[in-house]
Length: 435
Ligand code: GAL
Image (cartoon, rainbow, N blue to C red):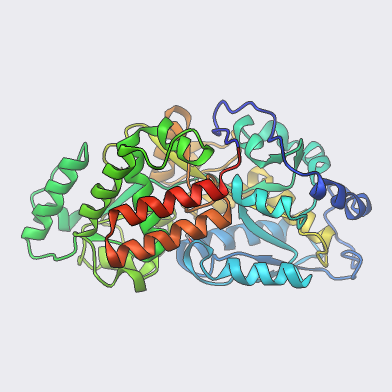
């Protein structure tokens, strides 16, 4: 895969992929009315007017974001009914396998969330989603989204999904009281300062100052460490084949990550991100590295005593990911799905969703003043920061690669074998990188 950063990508879509998806898409797409928002009872070939929306946003801030979108859908798409197909579990840990078997059995939901970039390309290349390029023209979406994001959604010149947002992954969330009690008054500038602060919190009797959960949450922390140790360009190169996973800087990153793990909760492999977040909320930890859905979740849970900083040493790097929605091939109610997608891409839909999801709108025409404090800061950073993709959330790597990375991290959590982790990651890269 050749990865184009969101800003300044300008490649006009990926090349070198098969044309199977595009060819297979033609039949159903031709039957669809571009831009149709049904008020008729005839919601599609099946006559259904239900739109089953498949996500993993089942609770807290994630559900709040989804609820916002659903409300707007109700306004925009009279005659269509939202059906919640959410399968709980952070980062789609459970949802993705349920979805895979439904797609395989030919019983897809009417729409599902997929991460822009390599993860989305998996569905496109498997011929599981429809080309909606014509709707982009009808809905004016090519002008609404940044060109680099459009590039990440495009395969062989065609677009198959509508992005709802941009999330940032490389953020550390803190419990302000825990840090104040440890005498910490400023954000750590680098890894050494971070470790010194973790020591200070530990000295106050907090055994595991850095809260973390299972595999994918560990992959996120590890990716942040790699951004610090390799710098953003070499980090991005790990995913497009221009940086060797056997590089000594990767070894350094694994060792730094190993050091950080000594400050984390030992039950990590059994926890989801929200369990780790609870440790921060309860004052049992001072810090958690997590995507900015955490801002929305803390707000939804009415925990206000929090602050955040970019992972130490990441500088001005914004590690991005985007949730986008697709029209699966064989969906029951394509007309209703199109109306959902139109809402997702609209200014009103993006505002309804992102103000309560912690993310920022993918559209470039949003007014920062409409957003909470965290998102205002993220919007400013998005414009100025260097952008790098995330493997844990599909913008950098395919699902196969992500699975291999998660299991390598899971094994490392138990065995702490630096050489074994580096070897497993190098093997995964050689297997999955698209040249
Ligand atoms: C990500 C997704 C986010 C958020 C997060 C935690 O993969 O893009 O929107 O839901 O998982 O579940």
